[in-house]
Each structure stands twice: as C-alpha cells, then as structure tokens.
Length: 156
Image (cartoon, rainbow, N blue to C red):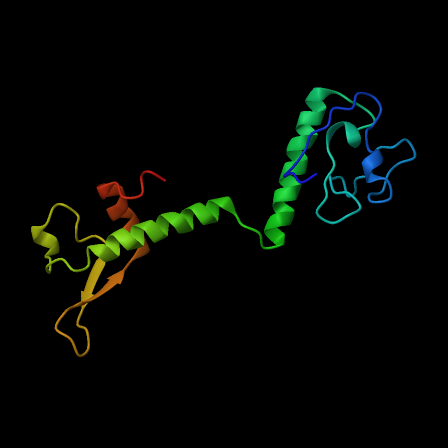
C-alpha cells in the first residue's frame, strides 16, 4: 500500500506484526525505541503511541508521543538534507520580491530627498563601467522594507 503515513488504533495489544523482522521489538510485541526518543532500530523510522507505550496505553499519551515522533522525524529529515518549510517559504518570498523589484529597475533615476513613496528603498546607485545607466544593487533589508510598504508578497 502506497501512503504518506498511517495511524493505527490497536487497544491493549500492539498491532505490530507487520514490522516483524524489520524493526526491533520487545518480547511483548511493542516496538523498541532508543536513546529516550521515538527512534526505532531502523534509521528514519519512529514509533509512537500504542505500538511503543506498554505502560500508559492512553490516547492522550499517544498524542504526546506522536508529537515527539513528528519532531524526531522532522529533525532527521533536516539532517538528511530534505526541505525546511520555513526556509523554502522565505526563499519563495525573496524570489517574488526580487522579481517585482527587478521589474522596477528600469524606472527613471530618483532622489531620496524628493521622494516620499519609498520607491527608492532597496536601490543603491553607483556608476556602471562602460554604460550610461547606473548600476543597481539590492540590499535585502531595504528590499523587505520596500515589500512591506508596497504590499508585495503579502499573499504568501
């Protein structure tokens, strides 16, 4: 069966038969976890709730250990180089901001002291070698201020 994840309610007898020979188990059928975590005997596999808890066997403690397992799994995925949602969202926002900002580079020259609409934020002029147009450099802090003032990226 192909799936992203599963939760199995098992009552007082751990329903772990499908893991026989694949994960380390106690003689009572509960999955073994190691180092005071939810980590199992196979790297990247984590056990929570009724399959690992032979003491409490309660829904509320299963929910808590499920949260622990999800955190352990997220940490493992991060160490394996898989995506960090926060960093990916920030990168997407910066890409959108940069494309919106790059589109405005062709505007006429500006004077910081004559312009109250913040269209100057994020731009630093210097003389471009071999051309008549000024070189435009983008400062990330100024770009974020500009985005906040213009509302660009607010839909993310």
